[in-house]
View 1: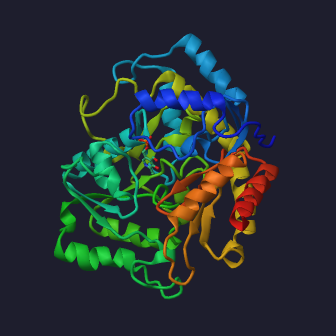
View 2: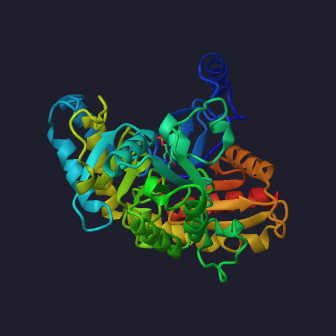
Length: 437
Ligand code: PLP
């Protein structure tokens, strides 16, 4: 199914709802266009006025199996009739163990793992921060510029993507230093891919550890395998190879944040698999339960020595969310990860020539259905063009295609993993038409 726009946007009902929203909802939310969702199925969202949109934003990379997948809906309904809540922190129930066993076995690396359940990405990251400190007895962390790990005080301290996210909220959790990420299109060390000697990792040892941060004080390096909010930035494989070597040399944990890149989005179950990366700690959320709230922290079992009471959450691992996750994982393993790989590769193949075709496209990059298009004012100077990116998003909305931005000037393409080639073609053609216009 493809989009159909019947009214001016926003339509009259959407407009009225937005006026009510404006009076009562926190103004801290960043709505980039006036979409008021009424219901959705698969990759199609219908608004209050009956306009149909093709969703290439997936509720910020969340509805991995598409909106309201019948099997996910069925499992939620069945579970809700049996047991909605019990609190896994104080009592036992079966599907929480089922999901923990499944995830412990799925995470890359053949080592025993244990699983902690929360309700969101930021909670998974907070749990990882606490566990890393507890397990190592070290207080400090390294994170990357451009990273996004969440907005609660600990995860916000690790976040390094937009200063507005921090403005007015200091002091954050102390002990975080940010270092440059492997953003090869804008190499922070001025290298070309051919001349790269992974300076971004070398710099950590030769500069940061030598001058300001003794490595023995560092509990963990937090890293996204593909930077999400920072602009869908894909590092080279050797970045993670070098990072692993550095971490092992100094007994530092690698905490890999797969909240956005995990659960099939990149065409493998975990983005880490593209890089041969074996994490010590992994954080998951977003796509794991097709839209039901669930955050997960999986760690090497030997690290999880914290005692009862050290960390827990009343709602974490809620049975309904857990059931949705079990069904989601079954669908991902059945064929959706494969579909993400195939349709994503097709999209990137078609879009790869955009920098030649469109003078304001600087870079097209991605893995699977995690694709970024970076807009520039000039390909030679690479001056960022966020205004153009925003105009493209707005134009696409008016043509029935839902997209989001990432970073200051990158278009984020993160559809549900069920999309068909036909829907992918529509999205590519629509974005291209906007660029031509
Ligand atoms: N980590 C990453 C990599 C993310 O992309 C996000 C959200 O965008 C988070 C953590 C925070 O997740 P949540 O918004 O569920 O707290």
